[in-house]
Amino acid sequence: MMRAIPSALATVAFAGRSWAALSFGFLLAFGSSVGQSYFIGLFGADIRADLGLSHGAFGGIYSAATLASAGSLLFVGKLADHLSARAAALLTTLWLTGAAILMAFAANAVMLGAALFALRLGGQGMMSHIALTTLGRWFQRERGRAVALATLGFPTAEAMLPPLVAIGLVQLGATSVWLIAAVLMIGLVAPTLFVLSTLAGRAQIRAAAAADPSEPGDTTPSWTRAQVLKDPRFYAICPGLLAAPFIVTGLLFHQSRLVEINAWTLSGFAGLFPLFAGAAVASGLLTGALADRYGSRRILPAYLAPLGLALLLFSVTDSLAVAAICMALIGMTAGGATVLFGTVWAELYGLAHLGAIRALAVSLMVFATALGPGAMGVLIDLGVGLDAQFQGLAIYVAACIAGLLWLQPRLTAKTPPIPADGAAR
Image (cartoon, rainbow, N blue to C red; front, side, top):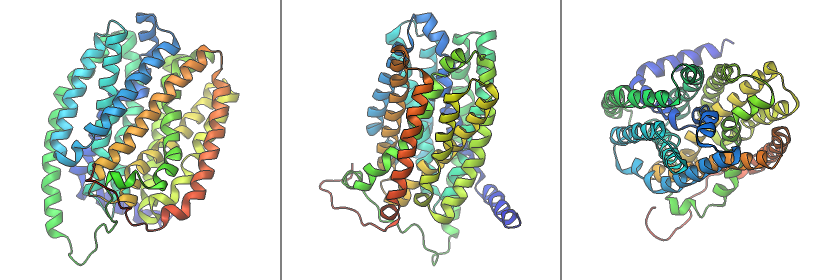
């Protein structure tokens, strides 16, 4: 307990010194919510009813749009290496504003697919990517703590928005809720990001000028994306890192089905999201502190365990009280995943091409989130219940944990970049 006090005070002091940069990352994380699965999933029942879509059809359109956004991100994501953080953030905010407007007036499956593509590319894709890439560059010795604090924007949105959206759907309707989201993006998020990025940029310049030249910075050799694609460790680590987005996205996207089969109410289940968010906050802060002390690679195997337990509990209960425990457990994994996905690539592959490398990793993550809703929707249509699906996914999680444990010696060893032909991609 006594050792935790200096650590907490150090975190407070760090937040005070770096408030503008951390707030910039926080707002990007929060603003990405309009393109996240849990947010879009809240509209699932209305969308299916309005357009006459089955669970599988809606999940298929969503998966196709998400896959397209993942492919696009491979190219668009490199902008984080070439544009300033401010320019990239503002362009993405404008894109999301248009996407929300398109979603508000989607009158058929084609418009729905286009709107979902725009939301997924701008929200889950670029806005999250810009936040984590920028923080990874701006902070080195305290990268884990910075990512943990700034990405509190994710669970904050997860706690605040589902109850508000549930009320808005009842009182105003889906079209009005999407239009309100568009107005907030262009009228509030964009100007605030402009101010914060300006202040953060000035603070980074002052910090660089005041840095002790005898104090080493990040000494990790920088890999190009072409070199990363030749590294077997990259392919070995991906199943474990992609398990959480694949499973959590699928579960939250089909939350209306989960509510239906358990005879809950949407507002009752939405009321559990603050537990999800609170657990994500605590887990993210702990993961960030551990990543700074021990390195992200050493703590990778532990982050999936709460998710595995939650899946098992969800598969054997119809109690909303037990569901609350499950949501907290899922939040623990989600909070850890957010921090680890923001720090592990810089630890493994350096900073020079971090935007391109993270674009590759985020594209795979988005691809995983595309598979989750589509696969679960098809299985639901085929009569495979969520209970059986959750049990199968729990086995997959256990296998991922075993794989990450086996990888530990290879991940923590210092490995020089693999020679690769051609320029950085």
